[in-house]
Length: 336
Image 1 (cartoon, rainbow, N blue to C red):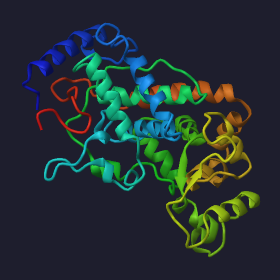
Image 2 (cartoon, helix red, strand yellow; image 1 turned 120 degrees about the horizontal axis):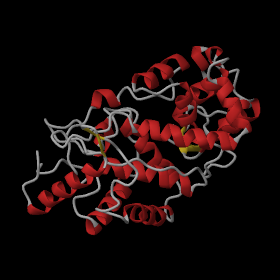
Image 3 (tube, rainbow, N blue to C red; image 1 turned 30 degrees about the horizontal axis):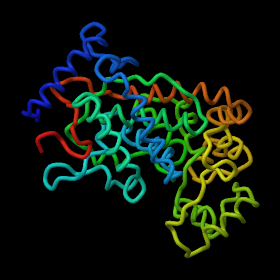
Image 4 (cartoon, rainbow, N blue to C red; image 1 turned 60 degrees about the vertical axis):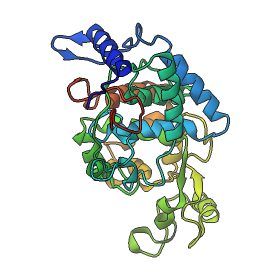
C-alpha cells in the first residue's frame, strides 16, 4: 500500500526520476549510479555506520553479508527478510529455521536506514541497503571491491515457506546444486559464495553430528582432519552448549581471504555443507577443482566472488513501482 504522506509522495517522485536514468528499453535495470543524483553520499553514509558498528561488534561484517544472501535467496533481493511479523498479515522470514536465533545485524540496518532517511528521505531502499552493506563489509574485512548494482524496491510481503528452504549447513552437494540452480546460479557461484564463510561464526549444533555421530554411526566424520576434530571436541563437547560459537575459519576468522578454501583442502571445513564442496564423491571434477583453484589463488577467488555477488544481487530484483516501495522503516510496510 503506497504511503499517503507528502514526505513519502516526494520520495516516490524522486524514485521514478532516478529509475528513468537506469531504463533500458521498457524494463528498469539496476545500475551502479542509481543514486548519483538523488543520494550521492549513500555509499559513504552506509560505510560510516558499519565502521561505527564494528567497533563494538567484530562479527557485524560477516552478519550483514549473510543477511544479503538470505534475502536474495527468498523471492529475490527485495528486503523481505527485514520485515517483522504482523499477525494474520506477514509471517516473518526471521522465524524460519535458517534465520531464527541466527540471522543478526538488524539493528545496524535500522541505523543505516535512519542515517539515509535523514540525508535523503524516501530514496534508498532497504534491499539496496543490504546490497551496499554486504559489499562494504567484505571490503572492510580485506576482501574485494565491486560496483554494486542498485535500484531495487522493497517488497510488501515476506515468504516464510521459501525462507525455510534456504541452503542448509546440512545439505549435501546435490541439494546445494539444486537450490542454487533454482535461483539461476551455477556451481561456480555455489563454491564462490560459500567462500563468505571465510569470516564469521557458527554454533556448535552445526558440527556436533560430525564429531560424535556422523550419519548415525556413533563415530566422527572420517573425512574431518584429526587435529581439527580434537580442537572442536574441546570447543563443542558432547552434550555441551549447542549454541556456543566457533570461528568458521580458525586461521583468520575476521579477515576475508582464501583460507576458507585452504581449510577445505585439508579437511578443516566446519560446516558439513562446506566440506561437501571438496570431499563429496560428487564433488570430484565438479566443485572440488574450483576449491583447489581458489585455495592456490586469492586473486582468482576475489575476482569470482565479486562477479558472483553481482549475479546473486540480480536474482529477481524488484523494480516495478506497482509491486514494491521504498520503505520508511525496513521492519514494516509503509502505512501498515
